[in-house]
Length: 300
Image (cartoon, rainbow, N blue to C red; front, top):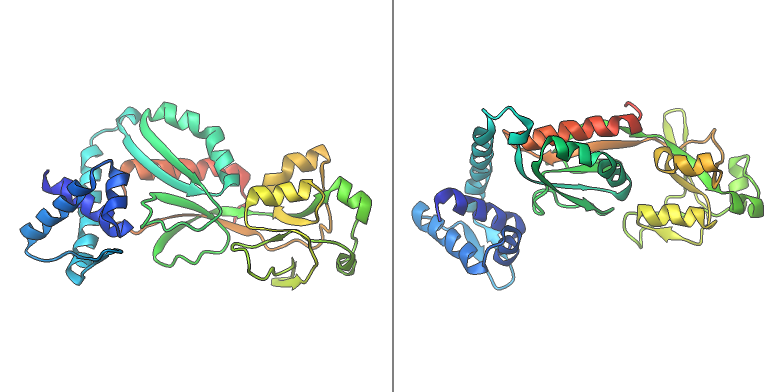
């Protein structure tokens, strides 16, 4: 095994804090991953990792070497394709994460991208949890909502306009709210990122200020699909991106309510780890992703 291969293995071990997980992600035996890092340590004359029965942790030298390794490997990846101009020349795996709503749009348009770049394979993770971009080896992620990852590079893509809506069956039973005071007689389907959190209530803007009105509800969810399904089932009012429910609004299954009290728009961002040079395939994919999602987003 050459040093470049060993560096790839070391980076994955450092990111996943596990020889077993790193070996699995690379399709290698665990012993090969361990041996590769041992050879690196012998060549460098320093310990890169603290090993215990429970976890693997970078040493101070290991942290410095890890940061340099990422830059070197990114440069090598760039060099290997810098003279390959044809789309067919791009190859390799892309790991991307987004929520299920955005994933639907990506998958709709993905066949054309793969026809233009037949050497690329895409691994698309669809989850509402916030993944660890570096530790889980993602090339980029699409985030909907306020960002908290200060150690990542953020590329704003646009924003989702939020609509208040309920099923026609719910409104027939409970009436159509006309004022904020009417919400006291209605139910809100609560959305939280982690079950157990206190729901904020009905959100609305007054000028540039965001306000919340506490509301009762019989359903709390932490997933986009369950949120939409609960609304369609007549379990209450939701506040959701208009783009994701536009077809149900057009069909009449869902009805907009209180349009004068819109929630704050939700920003949509493309995040990726800080690297001095991104590989060409990642840059091409991120540009394609931004262009693909643009028709479904409002400009910031």
